[in-house]
Image (cartoon, rainbow, N blue to C red; front, side, top):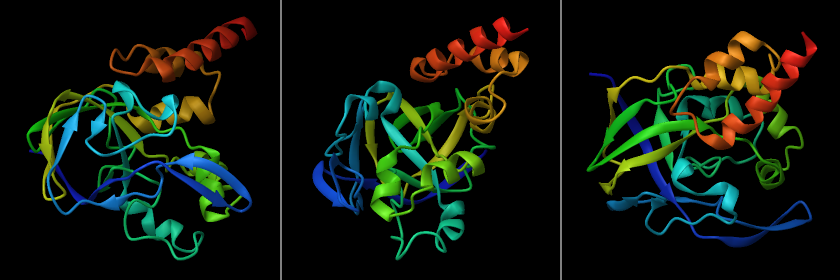
Length: 216
């Protein structure tokens, strides 16, 4: 059985933060939980999101691969050991190539499903004073991804992710059409055919496909 180990389970509260002269509301500064946390349909109990676009049932959990921390250590000054990008799950081995939209995992008492890639935002660049942070994440494909919760329950950093059901298109494939091969009709149709892909990702991809078809 395919299983992935967590480096940490993280959550945080919304704060007013100022980085590089920019002030904004964010819960990006998360800390690792030492105790089990209840996972609901909209996320970990006690975890907050500052904006509607950062929450909801299709964005209940954010995972970022611990595998990429070495890449960022020479780019980010004094990087934290976990929750580098405000992710809930700092996970070993589960990358965008291995994670597929629709993958279902047992996680402690809960069951979760990959829903869409994470969309990098300017707050990450502001926090670390790396102006091209978002561009780097898009170019490398090191975006991380999001989950919906199919079954609520207690979870902890000691729990592993056990693959129960395999999805169709990889997160890497979705990122490819989002950021690079944007008007490839065949690839767009393949990604859009994924029933488990969140609507917030499908909507812009439908617009890309419509434009691609008009260019033919």
